[in-house]
Length: 315
Image 1 (cartoon, rainbow, N blue to C red):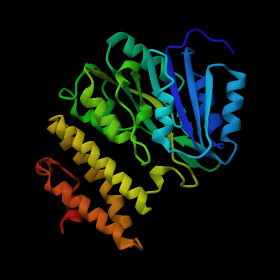
Image 2 (cartoon, helix red, strand yellow):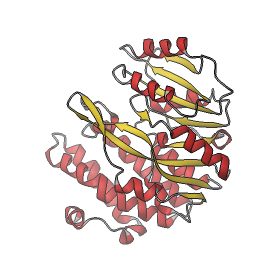
Image 3 (cartoon, one colour):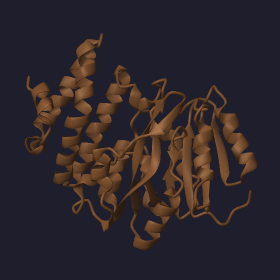
Image 4 (cartoon, rainbow, N blue to C red):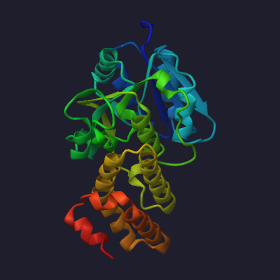
């Protein structure tokens, strides 16, 4: 297939996602804005992911494929893709998620209008129901970050934007990524990068439109579903620390409070539950240390966790 000159590159990494990759690629083919190209990075898959990517490229020249013989991780795969971008705009999609049909059109047209460095949209979770996945509603913290529409803003004007920490809900001007790359060799690599985007942007946009359906896999193999593993927990807490540090260094105090609010309300309850029954005492120790660090932050007094969380933290 031959298309018009592309305006946006979508970077799609994946490892062992053969069951989901066709839907992700179909969501690109269904875009109402057809002027895209996609870089597909097979990160050392042992299943048919590479074959699916190769078939897509053979059928449609908007797809380019790269294969890593051994897995290098999501951050490294995305960085490889970033090195190949030659379009005015760029975005990301994980190979097990799906774009809504108007996602690219909505985000690129917004940036055309505003001249901002990037635009962030809303997203929903897609959960298994029987033999299929069904998209849910926009969660409150996502809505707080993206609704109502705000154009040409800064973090000072919208400190709650930092609740939207995923890479794949955004489209950016390619030039904005000069000197900006993902950490490699760790999980949750997009959290620090997201905070760097908010603090470095001249202006950015947020829109309430749902742009991505984020799949929570039925088999529990997503990174976000693996927090009971001690190495994953350590990467997760490091990412949370790193994001807070970026906001601190930028002097974004109100945004630090917003992040603390969300961490205390959304992250800590599940981690505390896991720690209670975890076989390795190191898990609880890591969580305890992190909570102590949060308590030591000057912004902690202004955070407003749910009362049940306050009780759980009161030791």
